[in-house]
Image: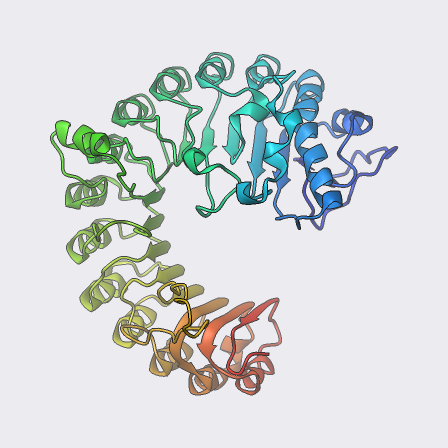
Length: 490
């Protein structure tokens, strides 16, 4: 299956002008330097395949040459899509995922006058040519770039009935490429999503990221018309009530991946909208978690983040209920949840197939970690992050001390070394209680364990380079190493 990327750098072969593709070529990349003008468009036709991806995933330096290159790349995307629409009739996957190209505070690429012109090729025209489309990803794509609006997605529903995956919205930090009032994605509303639900019955994956025009009405229709949903991702959509999420869990019994970031309600009308539905003020309360536990026995991956919420919503009782009902979990990722130690003990007993555990400021302690590593013998990837560092006040130390409360210490790493016989990746971030003693415990693990370790990361811990070296010498299979903020710094 051919994979073609626009405007991205990768390890696969770079396609140059005049290149004649080998029929056996499986991957091709149009680099940012090459794919900036109409001369490159024929390359898209020569690299025909079922997938097209366009990414710009580096933050440019604020110099004129780099910014000009980014502007040309952005201008190129509509032209490239138009050419693809006419020459790649059997395209099955379209992915446009733009990263933080330029901050609005720097007056970057998005503010260029050429991008404010009326687009000569709208995304709605693309669907009429590529009716075999099965997967669509539009992340961080400004509406003015491709003339996107609700009618574009209504046309998608009519022209592409085989659609199986839909991902749309904005992601990234608050300081992103958008203006302050463009934090939310407003190009799709209930009307379009309801039409997609009614026409695309093969829909298996829905990912909505910061979509402020989507309400519980559309989510309810997705649940009713697409009961075969296996992937449901909802990030910070403020007009979706808990009732709508409950409907998804009640009807979609085949769900395998659930990723939810409860929304921050910013206005009184958002809160009123939820309470008018007869539900509480939060999207992911106990009712939703209980329904998930009762109706999603095939759940494999669960991600919940309460980052930036006004107050804690998900509690230990709700998480315990999910662990009791969803015993096939292989990945659990929690961010800033208030979880008691006994919940981790339940996790060790109920989710014995767990392979990936990612905990960020969610109550993981030495006792909790010891229970998990003893009970989850298949654990392969472990990530532990402390609370985010707060900005230093004027006149204070620019590097405030790390929090040491309620975190894993060197004793926890000793338990990891003793029980994680299948560990392939370990990451520890923002933890003042991890020292060379803990790293030495890892280095003392059996050789057969250390030979499997492929990824290792330390960031903002109390370790030294000399202590880390002891571990690295015993890890011959290490493929990825990230070291930041060691003490003293490198």
